[in-house]
Image (cartoon, rainbow, N blue to C red):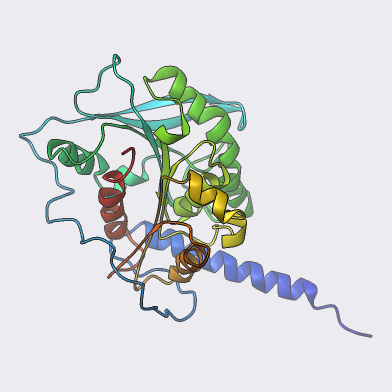
Length: 304
């Protein structure tokens, strides 16, 4: 009788996935930790910098400039069935009498809505760019991308339930987060005034949700996107149609990041199918040092 090995194969596959996600969690919690292993890194001729690295001091607070404000707010999530938290950054000189575009900025697998602030100072990056008149005034929303009632970054953050919660956030974002922001803040309510970006797990979410809803988002950024990223032909099944709608598609990764093959695959598909995009590869691995540089570069190129 032939032995049934399907169960064992499935078990080993799940273990490999869990180990990979554990590595991502570990990498996301440090500022200089090598990325998770995923086979050999093979760089192509076009895996190069599109823009120079941010200048020294770009992410340090300056005292002699105007500053934005970051508030913690709560919204009712019908998708999850509970009240959930957001951090919302409003720019220097914010006024309820003006209308602003919105950037939805997502975190990695091991964090919450506070992860960007836990390991970096995104408000300082944005404040400094405003002072230098390099970005369009915008509201930035930091949601918790784990759409479940217990959305804390504790316990087994790579359990099946929590992985599914990251996918479920698509519904929460579209049906609860965006309507809340647009009902409570003076924002412009059209696709060309919405951007979505994130790192690692949040990078995969941004590509999945942004490219999957080009009627909602026109500006999309995937920073060191994780294995939750859909296959390129699923992300962009209609290249010609997508090319007409996308205002900016920004992909980036470090040249020593064990996950670079994911972003390379998306880039190559887009290139072959003539979908305009930015492909940024710089020296580095899977860490916040990369992602603050991405925020610096991406934020200057949206809403223009």
